Length: 114
Figure 1: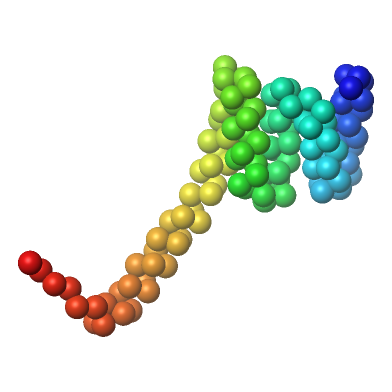
Figure 2: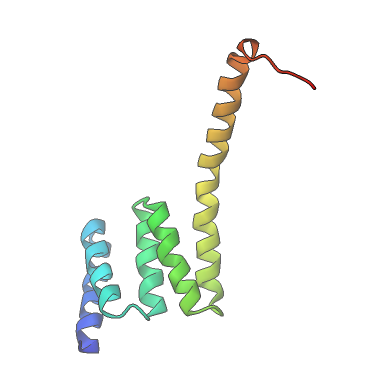
């Protein structure tokens, strides 16, 4: 595939993002990445946009690829850590919810000490 075609898809994604068509931009960036999967900047840009539309799992997956492709790029690493950190509150809320549920039913449990 010609590099110009990948660049055209990338630029189309930029325009779509600028006018608020975030899902269209994801499609364009995804096509650019599919045609040139070894481009860390393209992977990182797709990951950034997936983060913007709140697809955190996909964003983390794609950003990890970008970091693997460019391990010395501190911006990619920092952004990946930021996105991973945003997922942490969900885990914390799940833990707290489980503690609350267990405390509500604690009298129904019979704990045995040996």
